[in-house]
Length: 195
Length: 411
Image 1 (cartoon, rainbow over the protein chains, first blue to last red):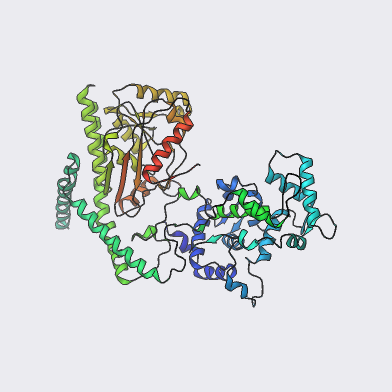
Image 2 (tube, each protein chain N blue to C red; image 1 turned 60 degrees about the vertical axis):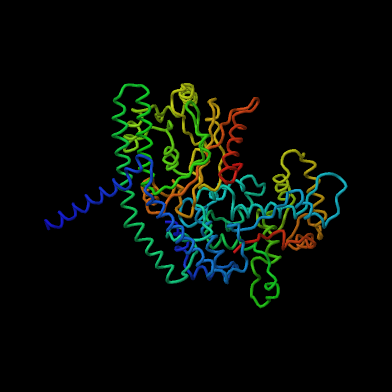
């Protein structure tokens, strides 16, 4: 039946997700409908193939990396909680949240956490450093095949040079934050959810 | 006990006579007694009242009201170049060509996540979400309790739909199908000639009319002067198998399809006796040349009925038109495009074949309020000089989408 989606998600779970991610009740139920419609195997979790079935994502140069970001280390399935936790990074930062500083942990959609999400897209081996090779891989994905390897290498070298402050030829998270401090991360890494 | 069975039999007889007299006979001859119109009027008034009630209740809850869009997110309309330029504004432009900053990934990441939350294609394969509830359980996604009156009307609706309308419709559908088999087999016994084709068309249309009453279908045909002629190919957007009933209510078509077993097989064999339809064996479908040849032979014979083809190849949820397969456009006949748009307020006509089997889909159809749809006949189209099949298919697709108020997707 069509209303199966909302009945399988219990009220307590919705409340927990609301607290953890900051989405509203109706947003959570609608995203749950989306989750179940992507879940072709109907086992309550999404696999990488479920994501790859989205045509617009398949042509995105960073598609595989974005899909990877949903899956915790070494796992092949993501449940609804994990799905929402990842999406929560893209909630816009509301004004009243900026003043909230009593929370023990930072909200998932804070500027730092958004930057951390982007950092992890580059840092494939999760060693908290973007090496020259990792940067080259992303560059290759994003610029395609009509730029030669040497050109790509020089672009990578220049990019690292600009950001690298301690001279170890790789970018740590703090250096990453520093080089992007003038960019309006809050707006560029946010999606406006309706309702 | 005896009295009970006698009484039940008598009630059954009365029921059947009523159906035949009030619904079947008018349907067969194409006139209407006004019962359906009255029903539809009452229905429309009830749904409008319900909508107002729900809107009033929601008025205070709405802070962020997106009235026309029913989507989950609001997408930015910017192009990639513009956005990347904005992202790089904080840095000076490098002297040599080829630029990259770490913030470039933001654009792609955001677009990627947007498509995970809501993309144009996968949402077309699930039922359209209604802006306002139409008092059916199946479309109750996030509508909560509003008032006692509304719940009572909803309960009454359930009783009416399941206990009164559904048995009525099932009876009609059974009568319609049985009559189709008997009628076409009877016509098939006649020798080929004008009388046979005229009779066969009459029998087909009559039975489809009964089936349409069996679904409480209200169909409005527009631009009937553009109706498909013999020897042409009729092309339409596909939402469910009921599209066939809808279109055949207004004239005969030759169908194309795979040979099935079971009940469908009986229907197919009966229908092909009275007029030439094109049924393919499973193995024949793989051979594209054979398929094209058979279709071309049929089209070139100007006495045969127009072929009905659904180039999308699959059922879509009637909010958009998907990419047309080019096969039908390579045959070379005149193409008559038809746009079909269902009104979702009265019932969801989309067949989600991965979710529901044919039988459960038909039962759902028979327990909806009604089926209201508009059919537009578009002027005939021919392949232009220098236009290949794909371009032609896209041109026809745009025309259909534009007329039906559907989204013309590039996927």
